[in-house]
Image (cartoon, rainbow, N blue to C red; front, side, top):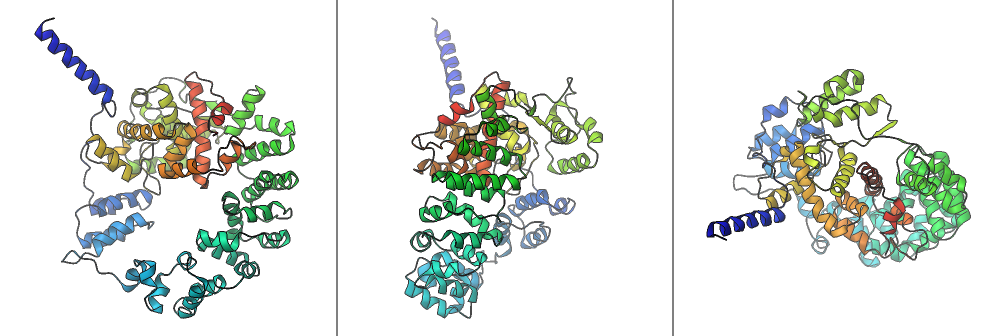
Length: 556
């Protein structure tokens, strides 16, 4: 082998290693993020989209006057906007911030705050902090702040009583919920997690207070309240809460082997339900509680592609009853629309057109780069009776293996229906809804300059999402765990895995019960829908995954 050949082979090997170690498949880097002007903001319609652009504007090198002018344009105020505006609007010539006394008090530690006068404590003391103090100290402070914060003082008087739970049970449902939610967990466990007479619980629950109804579900889902769980499991006459709270009362009873009470609450929940997914859940749990195959048969006939319906059709070997479409075009569409898919304001206008006259909007969207927009309009045209599991932007998704594609499509469908210019209320961006702080973190790791607007371009959004997913897939593995982490954060998913009461092999109701006990409604339902999406997308790639096999893999 000649020296030149050796050099050539070495060069090829270096290229191969560089490719194997590359962070993402090749794609042009995003351009530098363009500057936003005040005139640009003034000429755009108010709403979440403009608020996001105001958030970007407040992060630029602007004057206090410009920050004040932009602040007046905000449609919906939030902590992100306030944080950036506060930095700009409160800067003095010495680059220092002048704070009011209330803000100063609110920034104090608890120990420092307790040394202050009644006004400062009234400004800043929280019930959660107060509940960690000795009862004699709680009583002393309650007396001190009676005039500066009478509401908190009244709440603290209850905490300082000899029997706080007895006092609370004599109050209103709203008061009970307010204080239970306000105090520290350690206080709840010590003073409030006690056996309560079923009749008293039924009386409070049936006063139709929404805060107390929500509290019932919170209590049931938290493993720290075994005495309250037992008390609720022996009730049968709670009727006022909505379908979901009644459903969780049924789960709690079934978990504690009170099948009769569980069936009562499941049936009561069924009479109030409005959500098709909820119907599937109730039929599934009624089947488990009663053993009656009629409920399982109903589940198999569901018109909604939930994991419960998928499970039933697989177990019974029946054809699904919901209408799935993997292709939205009946013939090859033109390549590129004049509609700018990367412009959030253009998407706002198109949404208005679709709502006004969906049939008129369809010809404007029958292009390969507007496949998601076309499918969204078709879904509306078919009155949401057809479930589109489209695979758009194959030139960008298709560079990954089919397992990765199935997971990314499953998430993208749930996040935004693949609309490239999507912006959420929390400013999650693009079709894969990547949060700005993750855009910055990923850009840094890729050696790129962060560009939030580049997330409206499918090629960059997909590339960043795959990079983000790669880390959480390596850590959590199972698709539903990855979905929980994608929605709720990796820290949240680590907490789930650390809990000893979830996904247990020795629990006959698991893994299904644990799916219902994931904290946070959004993340709980998100995970279930992404898992169903994943199974259906894997089917499009020729893999017939079984719900039961996937869920059994979660047990430990």
